[in-house]
Image 1: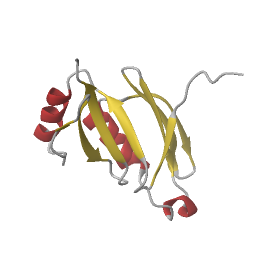
Image 2 (image 1 turned 180 degrees about the horizontal axis):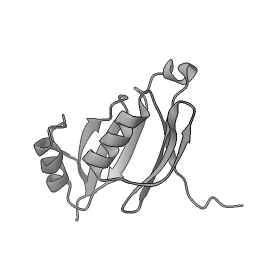
Image 3 (image 1 turned 60 degrees about the horizontal axis):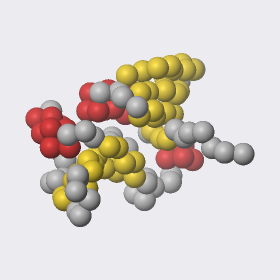
Image 4 (image 1 turned 135 degrees about the horizontal axis):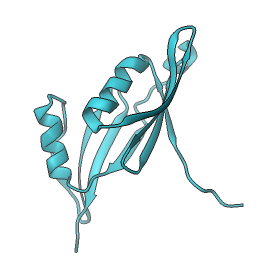
Length: 122
C-alpha cells in the first residue's frame, strides 16, 4: 500500500466567509460544492497545484480550537505574495528569513494559521 495524495479539510464556522477569504486572498477557485438544508455545506478548491476542502463546522467541531493547526503553502515569489495580501488589506506578519526559507503568516476567518513560504536557493 502507498498513499497517493492528501487534501486538507478545514472546518469553518462561517463557510461562506471562509470561501470568500480563500478566493480573494489566495486566488482559489471552486472545483465542486455541496448545498444542503443550511446552505453551503462543503466546497472543494484549487489554487495552482494546491487543493483544499472547506466544510461547515458542526456545533461540536466549533468547540475545538484551531490554534495548533497550520497550513503551509509554497509560493514562487513570497515577497510579491506578501505585498499583494498587504495591499488587499490582510493582516500579514513580516517576512522572516531562515537558513533555507522566506516565509510569513496570516490567519483565515476561523483563525487557521496559514504560512506562505519560498525556498531560498543556495
